[in-house]
Image (cartoon, rainbow, N blue to C red):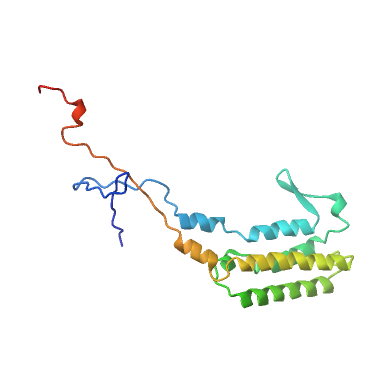
Length: 188
């Protein structure tokens, strides 16, 4: 299937090229929709949260353990398992879905309950030393999951991508056969 091409002048009026050559479109071959899809990455925050739970900070392009945070940090195993649990809701597939409010709330509650069970059952392996850490984990997972799932509510992001158009505009100027009038010599 080929798309019809219509050339317009700078005012948007159609220009008849008179059977002249076809001009290739100008601009990127990548569509606006693909650009937008490339920017939707809800999983990136999960990686940040994983490192923060381990008491790490991103310094000079690398994650560094902050010594003063290590008494409150959870283990690498705990951060890994809890972040993987959040990934089930923080993916591009979910962001492009069409969720309803009750689905969002039910899914968030299920993920948070699972995180609580995991943290309580594995408290030693996760390096949990106080009930306040359990509440902190709960709040982090609840907030991230709920907000991430709210973004596609009613197909919001999906609609945005669907409604995105890629417009290429090309302006073609035509000279008259004799050139411009002010360039002609008199008497010839």
